[in-house]
Image (cartoon, rainbow, N blue to C red; front, side, top):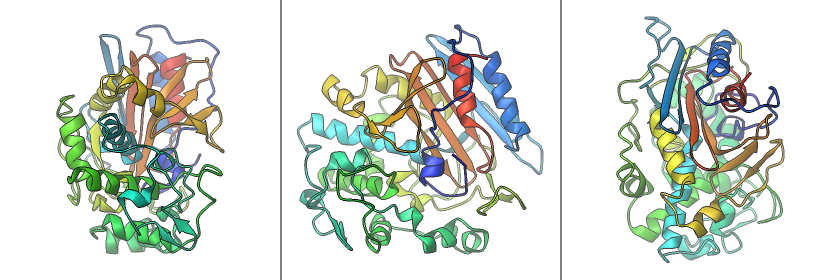
Length: 378
């Protein structure tokens, strides 16, 4: 899948294509040579810089390549914080599943029960869509980031520099989707839609009386001591230590490169606004798959996947993807893309072996090759 400058569109946010090249053997413990080569190859391919941290049992290993600043040529740091885009979705889904475990909602609840009248228009009907269908992208709700006007306003050069600091409310984003027809009837197919997770974040607020960000801080960030992880809301900067983020702000991978580090992430909302670093993401996904955040019933629901057309050897659960790599290893996680930032975080089913990394450019680099290298060697 190609990476283009779109906040959390399917092409970047679910850059989880599982048709990966590599030998049919699993990497040995502590063997990161192939990963190092794949990271360097991404920089050779045009990515300004890469930061990566892998954790295998008690062993932690980090690698960086390229630069974090094209002007000063400062290197990237293993401690870099970065915008994680749609990796946010796994956090949001985890909170909703915790609320289900507490008996405060059911995944079979209709959207209309919690947000009456919100999902209506042009064939959309929240009375027919369940919370589960939001989380596994089978709702059919139109993806607001696929709206042409939204794309020109926030993803292309002229619009971005004029509107990069605009604040969008979740209701604004849903209204964009409601101006279009649904992709399909609820449950009839699968299509990645950021609108699903904007609605999911609104459900969290309605159920708890607190924003989805507050719930993530209370339920996940605090208990796991994710000190580099934040839900920025409308804050336009990325906390230090961090690198610059770069984009072509075009539908092609050629032309000038622009610094897009500063932006108002409310345009991604609960579909993709969060910030983290690689070590925190490893800790989060490892804890999740080990059962540290959800009871067995809810973790099983999260790992129950549906076919995701267009993504070979992969299935989509509830904010969590399962993919089979070239050596037969299955990894669970999510990818995320936002202006100037492309990230991946995955772990094995037992939560023992995890890797998370970030490209600080959104137009090149083979993230799948990095994942395959870490788990399958080369």
